[in-house]
Image: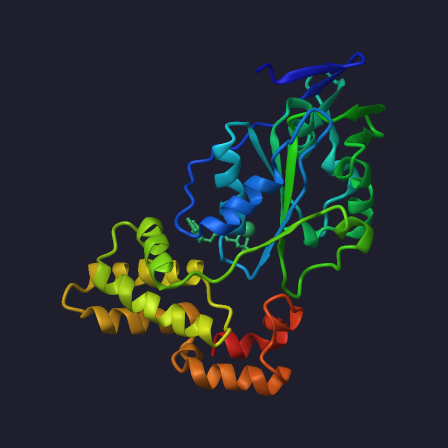
Amino acid sequence: MSNVIDINGVQIRLSQPVATPVDWIAQPEPFRQLSAAWKILGASDWPMVPRLIGPPGLGKTTLALAVAKSLNRPVFLMQCTSDTRPEDLVVNPVLGQDSKIHYHASPLFSAVLTGGIAILDEGNRMPEKSWASLAGLLDHRRTIESVIAGITVAAHPEFRCCVTMNEDSSTYEVPEYILSRLQPAVELPFPGHEEELAILRYTVPQAPDEILLFCVAYLQQAHQLELPFSIRDGASIVRYALRLMDSQPELPIPEAFQQSLAQVLGTGAFDLEALALRRKKQFGDVPRMDSNDFFFDDEDEDLRAE
Ligand SMILES: Nc1ncnc2c1ncn2[C@@H]1O[C@H](COP(=O)(O)OP(=O)(O)OP(=O)(O)O)[C@@H](O)[C@H]1O
Ligand SMILES: [Mg+2]
């Protein structure tokens, strides 16, 4: 695939697709749901644009990459931030060594042009103004305009997109008219015991089962209490515990695990029930998974790591 495309005489340089060396382990349901949403059922149909929701570190980006990989299309990851401007999502002008303006397609626009898969990662960090410029791309029109390059483009029929959303305090409210285009919602549940063990085994393959079992037991208790500790937290605890044991070979696994837990999540995370109780007192009833209240905000830092 050439990395320069000509659109009505305007040369656009494409972004590089990302390599997708990820696999999705266990948890078949969210994988099936995202795959289903991206299906094209007949000539006059077009793929849906799902939003992947759930607490941080549960696997939203990984799921999107893994399903994209299964479709064998180029994958473009667009990291969204509060500084993402409408033009950043489409075409960026760059001054070349020849003193001429060159147009560089964003990862999203590169997917639009080549029939790739765009992952708008952490989409709800992006301000409303930037979302507004995508409305026509995310609905049946499937078109997008670059004001800077002076072109309007209809998306390639194979173009697919999804948005991951991280519900924490540093995000914007996504406007209703955009949410109505980001359908369906695919929610990542906390994994069950066997699933979590399989995912951790895959994520930290060098870890002996004994320490993985400690970690899974801990995470399962946290999930039951609806505390937002994730696979990513678990993997960090295990990876650091392994390093402690490597540097101190006589350190028993339970002690390495405890020390790592204290340094990764804070000593406040030793007593999960007390932590859950304090959260309940602070937020009233046990918060729902889809509520913003579920997540720690900056002022709750002491609850997460004391
Ligand atoms: N079912 C799974 N299969 C494979 N890996 C998984 C699975 N679930 C979680 N993981 C692992 O969990 C870790 C966190 O995943 P990821 O970064 O995708 O989470 P996220 O939900 O996108 O987090 P954030 O909201 O912070 O961006 C990664 O190491 C990922 O490989
Ligand atoms: Mg992510």
